[in-house]
Length: 219
Image (cartoon, rainbow, N blue to C red):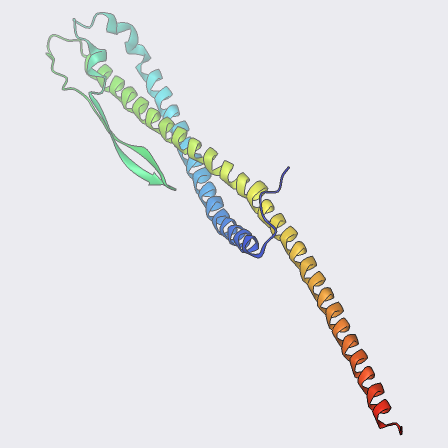
C-alpha cells in the first residue's frame, strides 16, 4: 500500500494535529454511544410494558369482539380509531425522536336507547387498544431512529480507534525516524566537514612554519 504522507516536518505537524483531533473526538463519540445505548434500553423497556398492556387490553375486549358484527348498525370500530395521534419532538444525544402525547378520537355520537348497553364499554376498550397501539408505534419509531444513529456512531468509533488513530500514530513514528536519520546524517557530515577544515588549517600552519625557518637560516 502506497504511503499517503510525506516524510517532512510540515507533514509531521499535520499528523500530530490530526491525532490530537481524533483523540479529542473519540471520547465524545463514546459518550454519545453510551447515551444512545442507555436510551434505547429505556425505549425497549417502555415498549415491552406498553405491549404487555396492549395484550391485556385485547384479552379484556375479547368477549365483545363477536358482538361487533351487528351492534344496531353502529360502526364501533370506526369510533375507536384515533382521528389524530399527537406527538412532540425530543432531542436525545443529537437525535430528534417523536414522543407520544395523546390519541384524539372522534366524538361518539349515538343513541343510548337504540344501542346495546355493552357498546359503551366496547368503545372504551377499543379506544384503549388504539391508544396503546399508537404508543407502541411511536416507541418503535423511536427505537429505529436511535438504532440508526447508534450504528453510525459505532462505525465512527471503530474508524477512529482502528484506522485513523493507528494510521496517524504510525505516520508520526515513521516521519520522526526519517527526520532523526536525516539529523544524524547532517551531524555526521558537519563533523566530517569540520575535521577536514581543521586538518586543512593545521597543514597550512605547518607549511608557514617551515618557510619561516628557511628565511631565518644564514645564507
